[in-house]
Image (cartoon, rainbow, N blue to C red; front, side):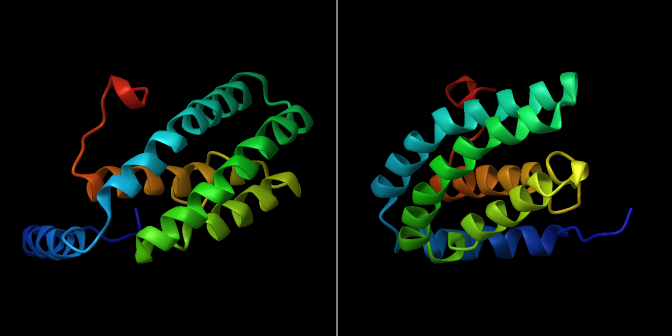
Length: 140
């Protein structure tokens, strides 16, 4: 499998850089944006489940549209609060556009810049930024 992984030194450096960055962020605002994002996250999981079980492209496009639309202002707010998160909105829109345009792999295919890939990256970035782990509160 092609790709990159952080080694031990890279993980240590990431933790150090993240701690420095977190000291400058308004984590209360980020937490509020995360809380706003959680219901949209649940809707996205439902879209993915339906797609994986029914494979109805037109219906999935209809269900995906409000999820992407709801995520756009959250991503904009996150980008204003956390400089490195400004990329998620455009990446989600691009992947969703590929899916709506007929690329069936653009919704859930792993390691392909699919909507799911970007979504999971955003989720992990939020958790790391907030110093949280996945839990029942976010649907896990």
